[in-house]
Image (cartoon, rainbow, N blue to C red):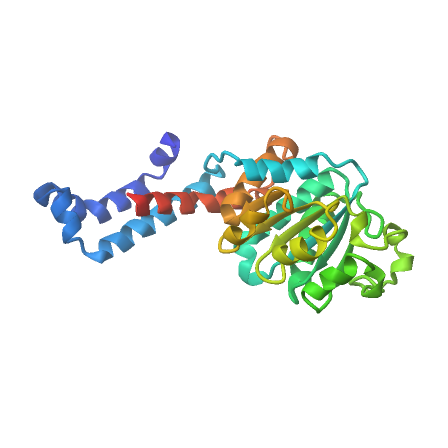
Length: 301
């Protein structure tokens, strides 16, 4: 931090100069009197610096703010970590571009973790634009960093099917009743890793990233509840998380809430599988938590 402040002296000068009138007002009137008559534009300026400076700091230094994983993040990590190489995992990515900022880092971290463990990944989505999110993770994680993994043998993309929770009900008992081909149009019987797969009850774990309904709640209600041997972990938006807490831990083994949960999970994955210099794409949650942390501290103060 000291080196950053020394090298970026001009930024320090700009921040100090912009806040100098406020400092003079506090010195003249006192803190309490200043707060009672504070022009709201000072609040906007303080929030600007609270967000902008951490973004700039992270961008220049490549460093992220420290993150301590919560019990829920550890539970999510442990569910995947205890799986064995070759175990089948359903990767249900039910989110869209509108929620990518909050959920994208989760999808990337989940894909990285599963690929590092060499699990068999079965991608699908209940959201119409979900296939774009799946393709994005396959391209930037599997194809870029795990070129030895082969489509059809190590991972498959089943794509999107309409029907909301109806899709969950069907694939829980007879996947082939709804899916006859993958997202590329290849017949399931011609895909090696689909041979012998009749329904999702054969999956060792469901990994869900959810922005809305249908999403985690439907997977819990229509897959895990009627078939209690199924296990599920999930990542969701901040507004969804309180609705899902009642399902923990019996029906929902682990949950990542919003970008905070994504950052905690990234910390666990990167510490074990990231190497000495992890790719920045696996640190997006941690990077995005920086300005959010400082902004929240400002609001509290």
